[in-house]
Image (tube, rainbow, N blue to C red):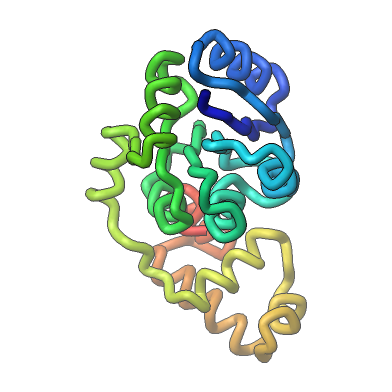
Amino acid sequence: MIRVLLAEDMLMLRRALASLLELESDIEVVAETGNGDQVLPLALEHRPDVAVLDIDMPGIDGIEAAGLLHQKLPSCRTAILTTLGRPGNLRRALEAHACGFLLKDTEPARLAAAIREVAAGGRVVDPELALSALQAGESPLSARETEVLRLAAQGEEVPEIARALFLSAGTVRNYLTAAVTRLDARNRMDAVRIARDSGWL
């Protein structure tokens, strides 16, 4: 029996997924949550074989949760199930050691098959997403530019970003200007949008 943890913040969708998976004779949903912060504690308590994680949840996102599970409970393999089919998100998920990356409009039978494949030690990635990821370039932003832009995306102003990263306000402004230029954006918020759409934040 494959033990599954489901993390999805939309209650109706989570319950529907749980009901569909419970129809499979070899899959058992042992825990559910709608909050990214609960993924690791629930996994440590219930010891699932596979965690199926949405990306966009309250608390930490599904990709961060996948990384934590890899560190703290490597026996639990992870599959990302999302509407956010961006190449950058796929790259981030693979860097976090996720073993599956599927879109939410995947057929239920395909999801069940993917869970079996991931539980058996394989990898499952939506083929169209894999192709898009190969065609999409790497982020043009440096690690520091990404860090500064990520804080700006969270609504932090230059003085707060400077304090958080132990930089001067002028240096933060330079990084933001560089990010806007590299992304060929109109302004800071446009740079955030471009980077998010590409999955670089």
